[in-house]
Amino acid sequence: MMPAERIRLRHPDRTKAGPNIERSRYELVRKQILALVPRSGPGIAWTDLRDAAHRGLGTRLAGGNNWWYTSVVKLHLEAIGEIERSGGSPQRLLRSR
Image 1 (cartoon, rainbow, N blue to C red):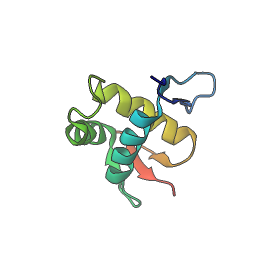
Image 2 (cartoon, rainbow, N blue to C red):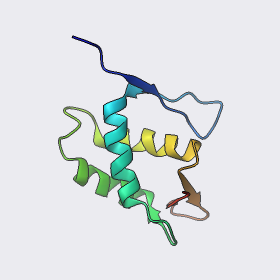
Image 3 (tube, rainbow, N blue to C red):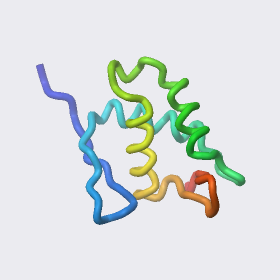
Image 4 (cartoon, helix red, strand yellow):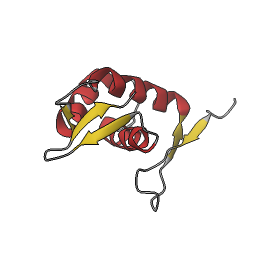
């Protein structure tokens, strides 16, 4: 049996290393996040994104922690410029591209 392909995630703070996760899980969570994050303001609050992604993912991560995967993939998408934080509190997210 071949090991699953993995991807090293990035963190917006370049002094921090991102985790190494299975590409299939990354793609699943990325698709879920991008479906939820709007292209125009005011954006989606982080807690709303986290909760909606958790509901949308259900048990498809097969034992994975939905909130953790949503968090690390969100940080990676910020680091590569696909989503961005808008100023203020609570943290709100918008699609960059």
